[in-house]
Image (cartoon, rainbow, N blue to C red; front, top):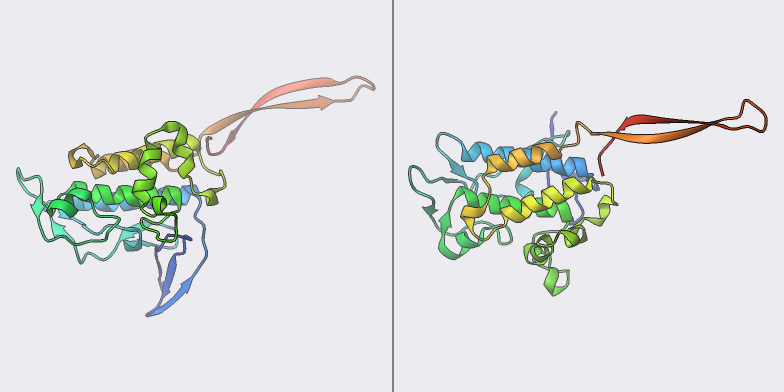
Length: 248
């Protein structure tokens, strides 16, 4: 019997594990950095596949609750009920009735009904921001200025010195800082209010791939050993050892 995890990541990163029909169990699971980046990459590949199909498809309702994970945290997209055929030929967008989820939908789509693959990119930026911060896209339990995730985070993303202010505290500083900066900047570009300035999903995949921790970089450490074979004399031996771990 197969099991599937329907990710309802926030606010407590509680995946819903589905076993059989209609049965579910909630499991408390604060996800580590490597798993969050794995989910982001898998979801990005799913959107890129849709956008680059022979007949492009716009997902239109990309959000955390529409990401499915298997038991190894490989991400797949679910619920294509609002998916829309993308523009073809020289067209940059399609016009459609405004549907989707507030907090994830791109601003130009909300204002004009113009839908394009870059609308999905904006939604992906929101989800990536959720993965980085551990916050929901909309959270009425927070102070007024922090209830909308993008409104709260974007001013902080503009300043490198303030980037770490958005880190999910549940990561407990157990993450590579350079990789976090790159992921945060990627989210920032995805959330550009000008849709033409947002990256393509295939470019997002290329940006996320190096952030995976499956191939950790070597870290050099210097170790000093003390030999006391001769009474009252100490001989110091210094050697450099290469260990493998996540770069900080």
